Image (cartoon, rainbow, N blue to C red):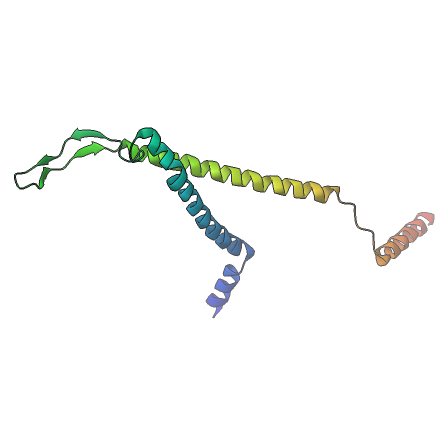
Length: 145
């Protein structure tokens, strides 16, 4: 029974819940960035490259050779550098998007801290004022002795 209690305490800690929310939001953010790359940026790149984007760029080392019956006797051997470039572009866009998102979040946090620092201190309660007066009176009495 102790195992279940320990697990419940672990799972209900604030950090675990925050992490779970972060993973869910991160997955949704990844889908947005993937859509940005695949649906907006790569069609423009396809126009520039005159084809299917960067994915078809390759350096063929050995061309495919067909056998007599039309089946490939020798498969094509190629360096698919276009896919590599595509992955680099994807990474750069994702990294830039995360950088921008984190920068916006940090600006909000900085503004929030500045507002907290600029806020006036709350007025002391009646009890605090009374306790302060009692403390001061006790100090005065101790100094007289």
